[in-house]
Amino acid sequence: MRVAFNSEISSSGGDIFIQGQGGYNPGGTDGYGFFIAHNGSTVNTTSGAINITGIEGAGTNHFGIYLAPDSTLISAIGSVTMQANSMVFNAPAIINAPGPVDLRQYTLGVAIDIGTTSDVLGGPLSLSDAELNRINASFLFVGNGLSGDISVTVPITIDEGALLTSGEDIIFETTGVLSMSVRGMT
Image 1 (cartoon, rainbow, N blue to C red):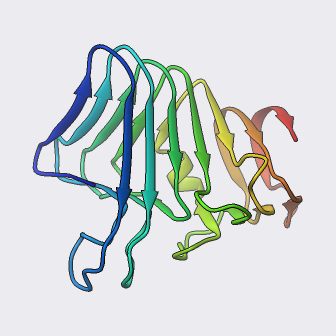
Image 2 (image 1 turned 90 degrees about the vertical axis):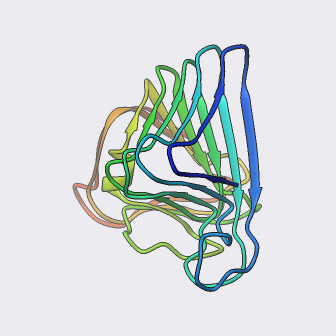
C-alpha cells in the first residue's frame, strides 16, 4: 500500500483499516507493506481509529511500515495501531493521536528492540528513541501477549505514559535506560 505525492486516505465517518503486502522490487518502493511519502501525504480520520498492518516484501530494505523523511502525517481522533515486523519512522513524519498509539509485531513471537537504530527485515521490530519521538499520543503501547522478548537496549525518553507487554521477557540491557511516565509493565 503506497500513499504518496500529496495523497490522502481519510474518513469522517469511522475507522480506517489498511493492510499492505509488499511484493518484490529490488530498486523501488513496491516491497514495502505500507509506505507513505512526499509532503502533504496523510492518513487521517476525524471520527475513529486508524489500524495499519504492513507485511514486508522480498528484497533489500523493504520494511513492513515505512514513513519516508517528508512532512507526512498519520492522524486519528481515536487510537492508532501499527503492526509489522519492521517499522521505520523518519523525521519529520508524525503519528498523532489524542488516544493511544499501539506498536506491535506482525508475526507471533517476533522480538521487539527498543533503542536500536538498525532495522532488520523479519524482526526484531526495532524502535529507536528518535522514532518514538515522532509519536504524539496520550499513551504508548508496545508489544502484546504474542510478542517475543522486549529488550530496551539504550537510554530512551518517552513523554507519554507507556505499557510494554510481552509473551516472553522484558529485558533492560543498560543502566539509566528508561525515562517515561510508566503506568505499568506486564
